[in-house]
Length: 154
Image (tube, rainbow, N blue to C red; front, side):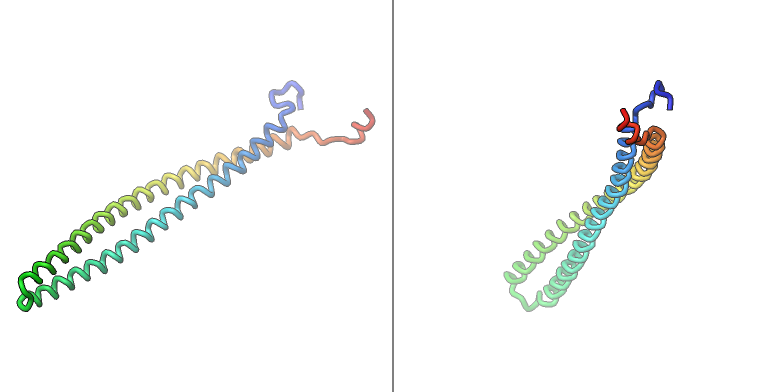
C-alpha cells in the first residue's frame, strides 16, 4: 500500500469499524426482541384484566337478578342497602372498564412502536453489516504481518 495514502497505517481504524459493526449488529437484534417481549407482557396483563372484568360483570348481573327476585320479599331498607352495594360495584366496574380501554390504547401504541423499531432494526442490521464488511476489508488490506526474523536482524 502507498505510504501516502489517506488510509496508510490505519489498521486500528478498521478494527474499530469492524468491532463497531459487531456491537451495532447485536444492538439491532437485541432491542426489538426486548420491546416485543414488553408488548407481549402488556398484552397478557390486558387479557387478564379483561377476564377479571367479565367475571365482575357476571357477578353484578347475578346480583341484580337476585335483587330483582327478592325485591318483593325484602324490606325497603334492605333493598336500598343492597341497591347501594350494587351501585358501588357498578362504579368499580366502570372504572375497570375505563382502565381496560386505556390499556388497549397502550397496547396499540406499543404495537406501533414495535413496527417502527423493527424498521429501525432492519436499517441498523444493514448498516452494521456494511460496517462489518468495510472494517474487515480495510483491516485485511492494511494488515501488515510482523516479520520477526526481520525485526531481530535490526
